[in-house]
Picture 1 (cartoon, rainbow over the protein chains, first blue to last red):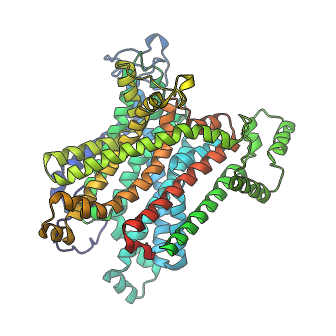
Picture 2 (picture 1 turned 45 degrees about the vertical axis):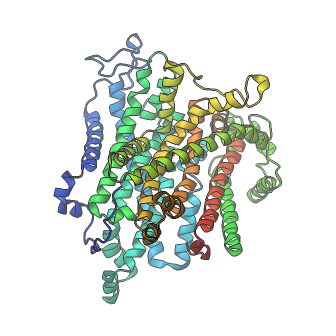
Picture 3 (picture 1 turned 90 degrees about the vertical axis):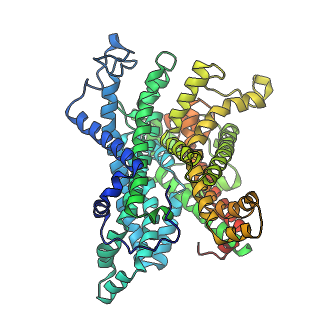
Length: 299
Length: 320
């Protein structure tokens, strides 16, 4: 984790959101090795999902018992599992699953969390207190616990797990948004906007949100990684994605029963999850350093 | 300090109350009859009505809630639907595995993380620091249940030092005992601790680095204190605040992480109990276990708040 150099003069808040800031520091992007590694891994993940939408080596759910537990070959790049399904195809299609979970769960957290956080920072008083206590409280139910409750009622499934992970993301974004927005509200440009007669809503959309976008983008990347991990855990337990839709977590569950016969089956999905999460985390860390070195201190 | 404690205790109690309302609302009031969920789609209306009467579901919601919370407060629990045993008895039995597991994992986490974090900070920007940071990136990315499977693969399948799962019990009568019990918990605790230690090591490192740049550290060094003395007496005390915050959150992660890891190692703990309860559609048991786990998370955060105030008297004034 890089830290702002001591004694470095405070920069003015960047006037624009994340993309512009990255463009400004294009030279710095290539000289940040962990960001490059992370971005490459994330690009591979997205590429795998995109390719698998159009083409797969084999239909991932196709059972082929005569060919079960085949070793890697030209036909089956990573071999087959205990039902003869192609491992590489399952991993490729599983990436779609992980991306959907990440996007929707982070989307839920971002939408509701940012709205609550902005509201708290703009209104202060009892509204802020209520939002903060609500987010304190939601922390009592980690994603897995909410998933267990929801699964007990609605049965296991992709939607249940996405909602559970999404709910847990709300307080994360609400707290972060409130903290960053509060500091934005004290800035001179907000004072100027107020003097110009802008209301709280306009100030939030025109000035506060663009200025806290960087922090949110970084956090979204990290929550995306956490969502992939949580979904994998839920699917491993059988509470997440259901067959025949392939998922990395369930592949690990199935591999565990074959640990003595085919130990490699337990290695591929794990490596894939770890690389996806590593890529997102490295990219998040890199983005934080690139977008605004001071952010490293805020976390 | 007393006022601070009273305020925190009130928040703790209020959070618990709201948590109980949410658990109750989600499991008993949301659309869908709990009796229907328990009995499945093929149940006849008569059997559903009979189960509703047995579970008291024909009573109004407020009276069911009051009965449940009142029972929890007095230490009387409902009967588990699947096991026909009071849920507290089942939970108490399983805690004998889950609690030592979580504590062992926490101890491993703290020991490894503090050692690595302080080492990395003292070797700032040198090879040791970079190595610890790389290791921590890797540790954060590896799912604990996958690490658990890899550990089984190495120590149970390849080396055959330990069994691939199960728990012999703490009592020597049935082949268990302190050492066999601990041995069975070692790999699960290790796989839980690895991820948390990776996170905590990074936090420790940056907290120590931050602290080392402060004026009072320079003053302490200038008045002749050794590097080691400054590190332990001044730097660590201040660095402990962010470290404690994360540790509080991590205990919650350990508890929920244990749900998954217990299932990997087939340990008869709380995690396995709640997982079986879901499969058995035993909503009574799910409700009580979820409430217990939520209460543990809230309680740990309460303790962390109190510890903050002990470490940093400035925080006692409130407003943080």
